[in-house]
Length: 169
Image 1 (cartoon, rainbow, N blue to C red):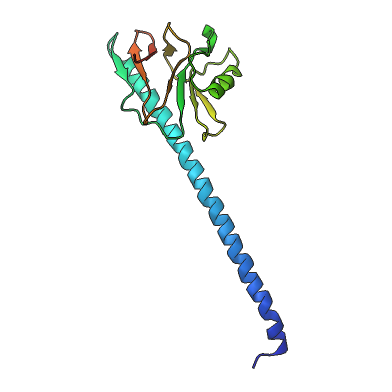
Image 2 (image 1 turned 90 degrees about the vertical axis):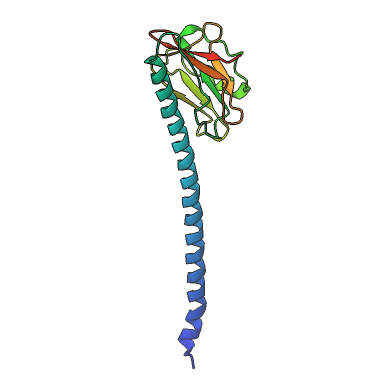
């Protein structure tokens, strides 16, 4: 037989279990969400490191050598990539995604960043990076390409002291 005090304490025990279960589920879901966001950041960082590596490889290749970015793994979060020279009067007509162009226009012309990536699911939607020795072609600043099936329509050409980003025709 249960005592009167035990009978009154039982609902509080169940309430405690329910609150503990809700807290475990809430913080577990938050942890999973944070883990997914972290994975996206790692994918983007890996992409930038791989891109820099390709630029460096082309830089140390022979003058005139051209490399496409076919083997570059581009994360699903990235929708468009632009190589831009802010100190060289960029026009933004080459940018396919209008929101991307508007966000790029906000960057000051004194910036040294020359790689812009855009994606609706990226942190801040737009991210900028400085890649050494990388410039745009004389025919278009910025040189932009939409990401289609994980590929971009850009090739890199060794021009001696710098690497030019060109659109593949």
